[in-house]
Image (cartoon, rainbow, N blue to C red; front, side, top):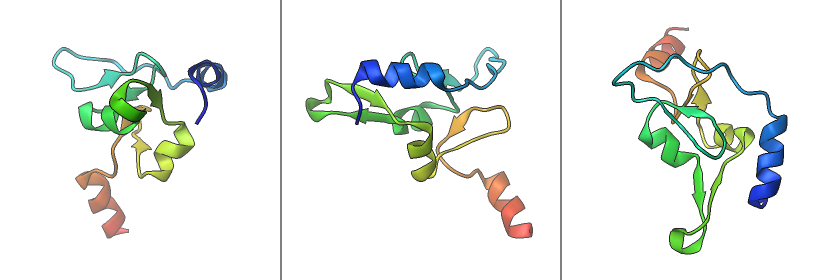
Length: 93
């Protein structure tokens, strides 16, 4: 894992997805460290790596999130995995 300074430098070079339109009551949340958007608390928590005793928190890279089964929806918002709608589309193909 990289230290936080290196991680921020890497994130600066990564192109950010367009900001989603957040509506009142939306479950979408944004990480203060990496500035990525997530469909909810489950996806948000899944992208975090906690060091021993929970003191240090780092964000997974995009490639690491994909390798753990996370994906981005059509709005560029990260989610924990496939949705029931996507599973139905995939099984119909």
